[in-house]
Each structure stands twice: as structure tokens, then as C-alpha cells.
Length: 64
Length: 426
Image 1 (cartoon, each protein chain N blue to C red):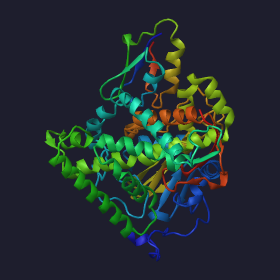
Image 2: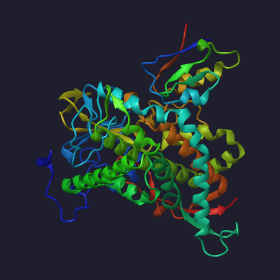
Image 3: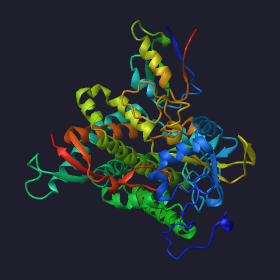
Image 4: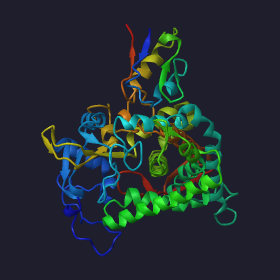
């Protein structure tokens, strides 16, 4: 599973970083970044889906 | 707009518009019944009139569905942010900067004014405040107990009634923002007065309202001058030394951004803390569950933010246009009730229930789009620590008198008086 962030949509709500710090980081402006090129380590898929489902701006998505 | 305002009543602190006659055609968000019965009013409008209109304030629209609130929040072309508090007196500063940048700014200027303020409120700058906020919460509770009659503080079984809004919640954001801005902590009452004037005195005589803004500006001019005379490392100095387009910020920009930071963080966070405690006081099963499963706290806090989102924003119509069949006219107001959006059953399952283990919770408590609450990381931190600490120190509590709870008026919704009977102390 691989996840991506649409940086035009991210407004820095910080929900993903709070829910899954193993998968996301935030920059100096509070905008979200994916760790590990967005590749989700085995076992963390549910956390990734939870982050996707909680983003108020629909900025996180599963890459093909 | 002043030609549409009815005759000034004798009491300058009284509403200019009488009681509400009908919540679909004559609503008034500053009528005390609005916040008291907000959830019922929104649910009723959602069924009968999802975009209500009133002639009050020169014309105001009230959309209540998640879809409409979202659409307006993202549409910066048809809706301007130059004034975000519906009132008898629009802030005088012009777009695109507005009176309190960046909340009152429109694109493209907005981006630059906001980018300036994002770093000091980013998670990694805010997280280190956690210990200070927790100490503050404990100190407030210690002070409450010390203020009780002899022996009560030391006797955990002695009956105790406290006001969780007046003695606890209201002090937390005021103290934190005063420290961040480098303002005297003893001016806390003054700050709450400014906030009250700006956010609750919205239906007063415009002259009274403008005088209140002038008092706030005059106070901030003194504080800014004090930072010139006594330089120190805080948010006020940070703004004074910031640049935009390679130029120092104008005095009006610095002062306007301080207005934003001072006004936006106080009533809002106070309200969220108070509403969460109000909920828990009426729902002992949730308190018991949080004692048993403390890992639920972050999820519970997001649910309190959804169900009791304190903030309704506002926009002004930027140009005449049709919105879902509603003929919106330039310079009319539009309320953006994010709390109503959060309760829309079209968006949330079991929307009218508070489920502290709601894992999927795409709520809009901090707004949506480019104006997402700049202070959301700080607000969340204060909310979580304040409610956790309250529950830790007072493991069992209930409303002392449900009828005595007094709710705020205006766009920020939360309890302003919240008498709590403490049943057990830790």
C-alpha cells in the first residue's frame, strides 16, 4: 500500500500526523508529508486508511 | 449598511432588533435562545429550510447542511472574508487585507499573511507547551479548592460546587495567549472584555461597537510600544520584525494580526473546554469509560470537537449570485456554522449522538479550506489537557443545576456559567 498527499489540498489540520506518526510528518508550516515515500509498512494499513478517512480536506489518498 | 439598522434603543448594550419571531425568516444568532437551542434549531432548519435568511444585520444567510457550508468555505470568489463577525458594524478595513489578517484577508494576499503565522503555530512549536498548560490547569484547580471554606480542600468527601466555565475553562486560553504575545497576565479580565465586546456585542448600537474596537486598538498600541521600548522574544516581537514582500509589516497589519490572535483563541477554546465538561457532567458513563480506557482520550476529544464545535465563521457575499436558488446580494452576510455541518446526518452516521470512540470523524470544527483555524494545534492541546486534568482531579461530577447553565451569545457557542457538583476528588 502506498499513500500520497495532495499538497494543494492539505491545510495543516494535522489529523494524519496525530493519528499515524509512523506514516506522516509535518513541515515547519504544519503541512503534512508522507514518510518512506508513502510506502506503508506491513501491519499499518489500517492506520493509513484511518488517516485517509479523517482528513477534513480529502488531501490523502491511496496511490495506484 | 447603517441605513438598514433600526432606531438606536436607549440601552446601548441591548440588542437593536427585538426578539426573534421565526427561526427561518427572522433568525438572530445573537438572540440568547439561538445558542441555547442551537442543535434543535439546526435540525429543524435542515428539514425545512436549509438556507435560512433574516433581514437583520442588513441581510444574513444561514446555511446548515454540511454540503452548503463546505461549498461556501471553499468559494473565495463569491464570498469574501473581509469581515467574519456578523454585526451591526462591519469592520472598516478593506479587502484584501481586512482588519485582522489573515482571517479577514482574501486571496492572493491571504496566502502571504497566513504563511507568516503558520510556523509559530505548527505542531512542533506548540507541543512543548503541554507541560505548562498542564501545570496551569492544576494550579487553577488548586486555587479553586483553596478558595473553599476551611477544611474542604483537605477533605475529599466534602461536597463541592464549582463553576467549571468561570473558575476553570475561561482562564486557560487567556493565560496561554497572553504569555505567547508577551502581554501582562494581570490584563486577563481586560482581554475577556475585548473578546466579549467583539464577539458577543454584535447587535449593539454601531457607535458602541466601533468605540469597543477603538479601545482594543488603543490597548494594543500601548503593548506594541512597550515591545519597542522593551524588546523580548514573543509573538508580538515576531510580528513586529516580520516582513511581507520584503517590506516590514505595517503597524495596522501587526496590530490586526494581534487582534486576531487575542480574539480568536480565547472564547473559542474556553467554549470547547466548557462544552466537553458539560457533556461529561451529563454522561457519567463516558467519564467511567475514559477512566477505564484512557487511550480513548484523543478520539473522544475529536468527537467533542465535532459535536460541540464552538465556532461559526462568517463571510460577506462578494457579488450578487444565486446560491441553490437563494438570491444572494453583494454585502449581505453569510454565517458558516461548522457545528451545524458537523451534525448533518447526510455526512455523519448517528450524527446526533456523541460517540467517544468514533474513529472515522472527518469533522470541520476548525473550518475547511484556506482559513483553517491557524491555532488549531494549540486549541487541541489546551482542550485535551484541560479536560483530562479536570477528569483526573474530579473523577466523578455532575451538573449542579442544569437550569443554571448559561450559554454564550453570538458566533462562538459554549457555556459561560457551568456550575458543577464534584462528587469525588482524586
